[in-house]
Image 1 (cartoon, rainbow, N blue to C red):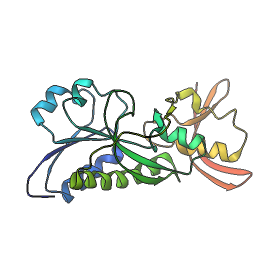
Image 2 (image 1 turned 90 degrees about the horizontal axis):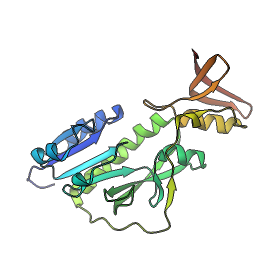
Image 3 (image 1 turned 30 degrees about the vertical axis):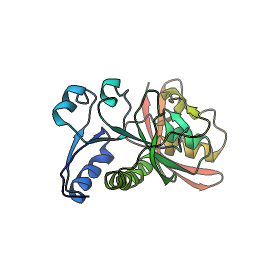
Image 4 (image 1 turned 135 degrees about the vertical axis):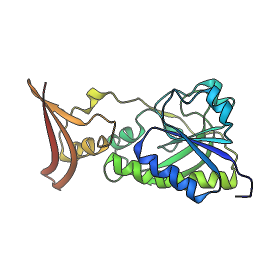
Length: 229
């Protein structure tokens, strides 16, 4: 990676990226910083830090034009772009029946997930959403190291875009599902910190589900929390 010490910034508020920061610090000679909230991620703060590259493995906020035009911002999106631009990529992939995907590292540009692609890497969609996010962290680390080492030139996306809509909390209701497999997918795809759990409601109670496992085609086991409405 050369002898020049550079400054890189990691922008993410997810707990499963805590180890990512420490591993990048340990595995490279460079200076690594992290922003966890959008209040810190401003042009003024970035101008003081002067990062060589900004890596954004998971972020739910709009990145200001004043930031991405002045600094090279790289987002990691969990689809094979241009397929799956937009919100809730993991949940949209699973509800569409996908068993695997690719993580696309793209430069932030005008428009949602429209920027040119540095590289892509495969990712399996087995397990809970938290397990998938943790697994994706290792993939993203390898991609970051490759970008730092090789500095690939991003190329324009090719193909017909497919746009995902960000899912709403009320879409986690499982009452209209008809198969064990569908219920299993709904529970597991929402089983991570910060996501609305799959749920059922009665007139007076709300039941939220996690840690699902399929016993056979007719039976699913899961943890349930019951709340008074």
